Amino acid sequence: MGIMVLLAPFGWLALLLAPQQELPSGNVFRDQWETLEFQGKRIGSRHQEYHNFPKEEADLPKGCRKIRETLTLEMNRFGQPIKLKQVREDLEDASGNLLAANMEQSQNNKITLQLKASRGDRGWILLNQTSGAQKIQNPSMIPLGMAALEEKILSGQPGPWNHYEPMVHSFVQVQPRTKGDPSQIEVHFKGPNGETLPMAATLLNLGNRNRIQVREFDMPGLGRITARPTDQAEALKPAKNALDVGNLGLIPLNKSLPKVPTPSRVVYRLHAPEELDLAKLLSSDERQEVRLLPDGFVELTALKGQPPTRRIAPPPPREYMLVSRMVDHTDNIIRSMAQASGAFNDDSWTAAKRLERYVKSTLIADASAPISSAAEAARSKHGDCRHAAILLCALCRAAALPARTATGLVYIERSKPGVGRAPYLGFHMWTEVYIDGQWIGLDGTLGKGGITPGHIKVGDQSWYQEDSMAPLIPIQKLIGMVQADILKVD
Image (cartoon, rainbow, N blue to C red; front, side, top):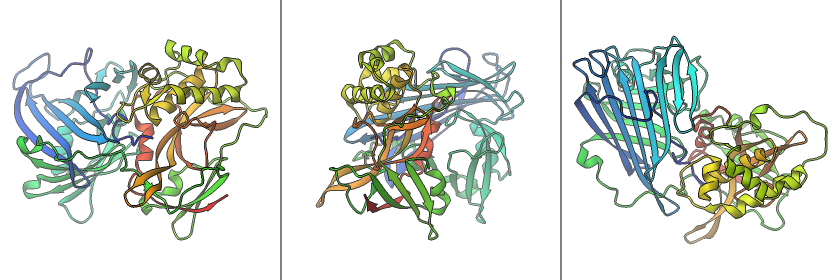
């Protein structure tokens, strides 16, 4: 069950020419450092270098500048060390308009994501080098680079402006707002047509001459990060005790669930800040009912997963059988695993359960494993709930069973000093398979032949045409924001 601390790639970079390479360097004319903190504890650094091109260079027009931003995070996850690094480069013309961008993310020195964005004859080419996926967007778009964008915000210009945001591997509208105090600026993000995005606002606290004193932003899977300007020596100073993010997203419960027999129904009472709109964030389906109560609390009833009932039903949308970067079920190793499991010899439901057991017995629990495609997880045989869910989804599709992944919370118990075993809800990811018109939950991490009332669903993902980790962002909103009690167990 892995808190997706950025391990589901953080998110940015774009543009360039050939295989991953740095954009032209130019001359460094500015260099700035920040320390990164989470819940008051140092977790890493942010470094920005500004390069200018006083003369024409590498076929670039005079007056261009490049901004190279490096984020480095060091922490533990359930006792296992993790080093995360993200390098982003934006190339801007003399007016601040974006010409090119690169982004590379790595975990424990292994590259996990590479993105590029470049202007072509038919529009902006957005390339995911990790998967080879490419898409063309917004032929008339004139986005700002990250340096020009920040300058306009700090100068008090109203916006909105277009900008490439690697977190969603797309263009966004950026709108600054102040709430009475001009020294505090909220920076909001919307889709290119004004649609809502799963991205929280960035907060800038300004000091003398409109210089940023504190920057607060959300990091997928981790939460609110605070960045403070400093010098290089201070920014690179190692933390005394590395933060362990493994238990950060756990939500304490007021009582435990019985293990035997497995409950058939559990009623929860949940609460979160009003702006989170918890009732809309949580999923409602045949297994889970969500009700907003007059006092602002949410009552959620979760049922034990049931085998499919025989019925005539139309097939699901094709996206649940198509290949994607994460669910690469046509890879030979996925086909071989599906065959080895014996799933081709059974009816659909028996085959699905057989595949669930196969994932449970094959995957070695590893909280430090970088997020990866199903085929990569199959080769490494290491991972957590994310890897298990994506691998099981791919195996189901390889066995001609439409499937998707689901994200949400799951009931777990953890040791607590002075208490012993204590109950919590924690981030989790599992799989749903489509049989006879019904989406049925399976859990490759637990391998129990289905899911229980301890599974609370937030959303589901087909991963079709998805080049980023954006499908995992909604669950991040719950981390550190939700209170929960168990009201009734049947």
